[in-house]
Length: 362
Image (cartoon, rainbow, N blue to C red):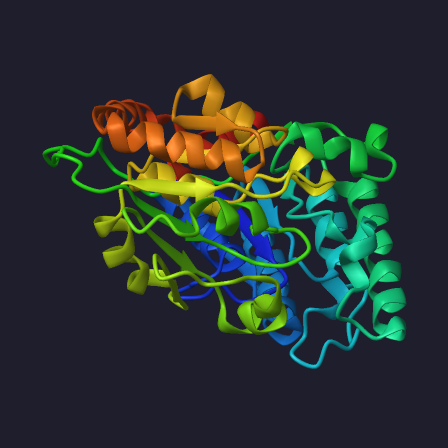
């Protein structure tokens, strides 16, 4: 018997995504298919979603059964996801969700981020755009409150920032990775500590103590890969030493960086956002078998400590200097942590995330 689900998202699913928001839906679709499901898509812009929704109605009338609908939200308000960001069909998702509920098709929705409730949200937006976006974010939550069976969050810790969170059944569904089997390539001797940071820079991603902690240490190498536009906004805050290489890579272009590094970094200032943030790159580091140096006081630090996937230290330059000095004298510790992260990586796959959704909603 064919098992079918509906996969909904108010944006197209990218064929070769580079960003976290693009990679996740593609990986979840692939994971559901890997688990034996036929996946019916209601994705794309308004025109595509309307046509797909009408086709879904025909399918149901013709006797096709769907086990559940899984939806991925956008980082933008749903009504503003058109290319021109105009709300040309503000009630379309209400029609889709209402129909599924009427047909007893359970709905689980992954709510990607809650950045709009923080003061930094409007940092680079005109005021009218900020006010408009927040209005539509609130409308999204009202829609979910009426129709969603389970609201998935990247972490349970995010729940306390969610307006009216008590109205929802909330489950945790963090990102994953796409590793199919445990890494079995030989571990090599550590001749030099080679650090790698992949991610953003800005109000949520402050790396000042990282730069300060590695400056003047020419015995190590540190690669920082971030978007060029991110760097242009903050470059006056940082000083690049001779041991720091700044690059602007993404997607497959990151592979050589992962291969040439032996320690990864999420050594960020633990601002409030990091109380619940679970960055996509955490799981990419796990997939690549790279142990991590992370800052205390973050949700990431709890995950790393619980799994022994790296080193948790205070966010200050002296603590970083001391740890790097220790690792230079004890390189076998990096090898040992690499073994541990390789052995534990299969607990964090996209397939495991999809299996949870199936168990919750079937």
